[in-house]
Image 1 (cartoon, rainbow, N blue to C red):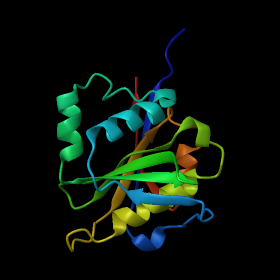
Image 2 (cartoon, helix red, strand yellow):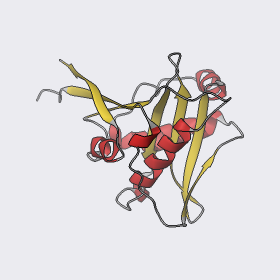
Image 3 (spheres, rainbow, N blue to C red):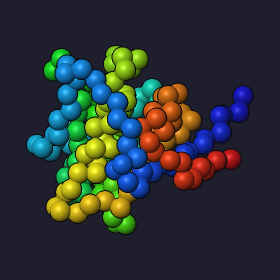
Length: 169
């Protein structure tokens, strides 16, 4: 049987006003991980991505993870439900003045609990926040048909617009 064709969809938001937020109750909170710990990024990459075919960083060494997590342009945020880790996202400033939502997702035990929309709302709001006095030109993300089946719908529901689709043969 042939493998499923990979379809990658790129979405963006050019104005903070495009955001259509979704909120959760006060039991769900998102906090920035100010104490950088490469193990946190690595472990959540594996735990969140294991069901969605995240493979690009699987072969990385500890040194590669340390360098990645220490990058000045990267910020990591964790979502907690009743103070239990529920998911995370990473934001990275790009060289064109935008902010990419690099990784985003919930731990398997929190999927289906209506937390994806609030976590994405937080990611977009944080991406638009002034960092170093710089307002981003856009917030963008890419997803693929191997991600959670509701990923694309969640991005669009929050106001992100598709600007490119790539199909890998």
